[in-house]
Image (cartoon, rainbow, N blue to C red; front, top):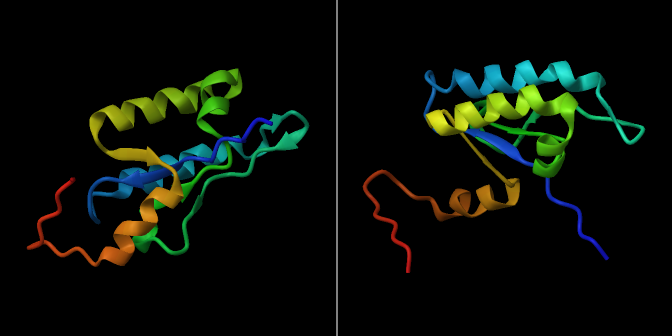
Amino acid sequence: MQLAALPDVLKATCSPPHAGCCVELATSIYACSNVQVAGETLQPPRPLPWYSNKLAWHMSFSRGQLRKLPILAEIHELLKRENEAGSITRQEAVSMVPPLFLSVEPHHRVRQQ
C-alpha cells in the first residue's frame, strides 16, 4: 500500500506588511485552477483559516506532482526562487500546529534537544 503525500502549505517567513509576497504568490497560482491531473481539476490555493493574516496557503497538489507535472513547472520554479530568497517556506500544515499551542513570545528561548 502506497501512502499519498500530504499537500504543501506556503507560509510567509516575515510579518505583515512585508509578507505580501505569500499572498501574491498564492494568488498568482490561481491560474492553475483549471488544470486537470488524472481527470481531476486541481483546486487553487486557499488560505488556512486558522493561521493569522492569510500568511499560510494550502495547495491542493503534492510536492511530487509539482516536480513531475510539466503544467506546474513554472509554479515550481517560482516556489523554488521564493523559498531560496527566504520569502516563503514550504511545509505540511500539520507541522505548523504545535507552535500555535506553545505560546512562544519574543523574550522566550526555544532550543532543540
